[in-house]
Length: 139
Image 1: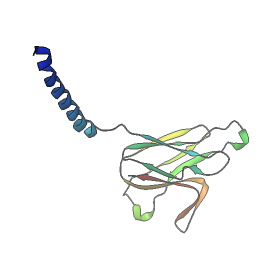
Image 2 (image 1 turned 180 degrees about the vertical axis):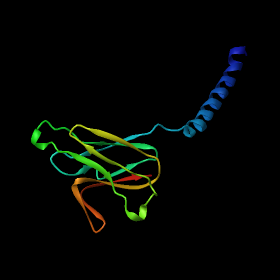
Image 3 (image 1 turned 90 degrees about the vertical axis):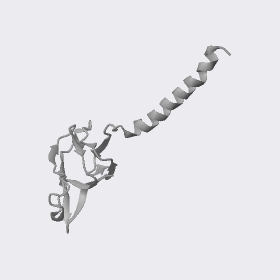
Image 4 (image 1 turned 30 degrees about the horizontal axis):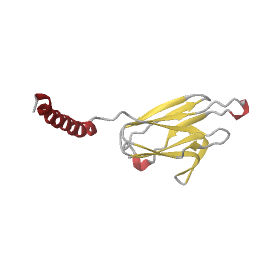
């Protein structure tokens, strides 16, 4: 046997060991934060989607589209709903006005369910939001 064929099994073993090591190390590396989009539905006073599911440290982009038809342009706002029993628990505080074409980003660092609404196009009735309301579920 020549030396080239003797070294071949060693190279294969080293390659397999490196692949196994990478399979152990890669899942431990932090993943980059994902983005989820929530937008105001044109011509209607609704957030789309109403329920958004994201992971911890993901970013949600709230967007108010700017339709070409001027009569369909609306000003919306994103306001967090803070029930009294949640006082200082989740730390989701947001109150921003979105003119047509504007967007804002919010990073969610803690697991939980976060509620928000457009104050202009919703109402709180018996502690429940009716109208342009939404939920963000951080898993």
